[in-house]
Structures are given as structure tokens and as C-alpha cells.
Length: 279
Image 1 (cartoon, rainbow, N blue to C red):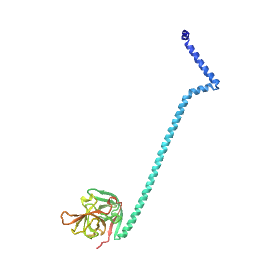
Image 2 (cartoon, rainbow, N blue to C red; image 1 turned 90 degrees about the vertical axis):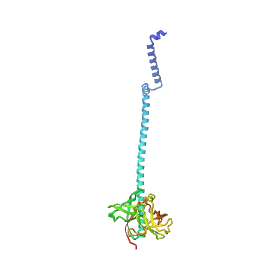
Image 3 (tube, rainbow, N blue to C red; image 1 turned 135 degrees about the vertical axis):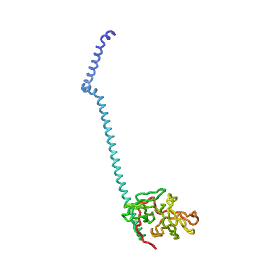
Image 4 (cartoon, rainbow, N blue to C red; image 1 turned 90 degrees about the horizontal axis):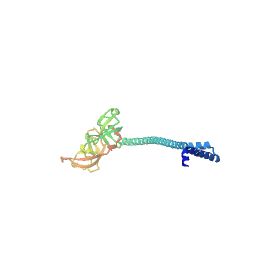
């Protein structure tokens, strides 16, 4: 038997394969199916599965990409809307600030009818150990000249015009070391000299020097410009006394004065282009 299988093994295998095929065909016929259709379906099944998987992947990828692009567009649209809203808010704030400035200017002009004022905007600041100045948006073309006083919207002294261009001017603030003008204690009428001091400038302070020894100053006393010499107007508020000290010579006293104007946050100022002399 073994010898017979050995010599005719190929034939036996061929007969077995044919029987398997005949059995498959008979089975398909008995079941009522189309043999070729079923065979084609069997062969192509892996390809159909691969196609379906590729289709699902493509749909997911397209959907994800579409959603990503949609979200990016939405973010950009919201950014543009936010920028537009912020611009409108700034316009509203500027309008409110401008109206406030006009109201304060009206009050100031009513209060100080002796002053001719030119409004200006602070464009830059130079505050250091060596100087304290601001640059404003008005110059010689607007009647601004050196040695004119500059005040804020409340009538407080900001400083004195130093240099002038056609449409700009540099203003030394009241704490700058080059400031030197007559001062007066509002409560007692004691006269003295307002001047900048290097050691005080970095602290945002200035000196009221050459006070009489018997001057009765106390912390909180208001200091005004005296108008002495006729160069600067009288009665501008400079600041308040913080402390009183004896001069090293022992002959006079001096006071440390805190400016009333907010020098660090100035936006709108007014140049006193002319004023009525007070005898």
C-alpha cells in the first residue's frame, strides 16, 4: 500500500483536489448560490475590507481637517471681533477723557481768568537721576515760549518751559535741579525759594529754601508760587510740605515739598502763555 501511494502520490493528490472542488461546487449549487459570484466574493473580500477601511480613514481625516480649519477660522473671526471691540472701547475712553479735560479746563479758566492757557499733550518723559522733564505737543507756532509755566487740569504747577520747537516744547518739572522760583506758604504768607535738589529729585520732591528761622511751617502746609519778579504767575499750587529741617549753616530752614501735580501720569497739560500781573 505504501509502495502504491509512493508511486502514485501525485495522482492521488490531484484526485483529492478535484473531489474538493466538486464538493464545493455541489454545495454551492445545493444552497442555491451562484458559484462564480461566491468565488469572486471570496477572492475580493480582503480588497473590499481594505477599501472600506481606507474610506473610513479618509472620511475621518477629512472631517478632522475640516473641523480644524473651521475652528481656526472661528478663532480668527473672534480675534477680529475682539480687536474691533477693544478699539471702540479705547475710542470711548478717549472721548470720556477728552470730555473730562474740557470740563476741567472750563473750571480752570473760570477759576483763573487771569491766565491765558494753551492746552497740550505730554508726548514723552525723561525722568532720571540727572533730569526730570517732559515733552509736550505744542511749540512756538502755538505761542509757547521759554520760561512759561505749565500746569495740569487742576491748576497745579507741572514745571517751566525750557526749550521750544515749532510744534513741541521741553518742560522742566518742578523737581528738576534747574528749577528756581519764588515760593510762598499759603497759610502764613512766608516767602522762600522753590528749587530742585539732586538728592530729592529721585524721590519726586523739591526744596523750599531760605525760610526764616521763625517760620511756623507744619506738615501739610500748601506751597504756592509767589509771583516775585513777575516772571511766573502768582498763586499756582506747587505742593504740600512733607517735613521741615534746619539748614546746615544754622541760619535758615528749609522744607521738603511734595508736588501736587501727578508728574508720573501726566497726559494733558496747559501752558500759561500770558497772565495778569498782580501787584
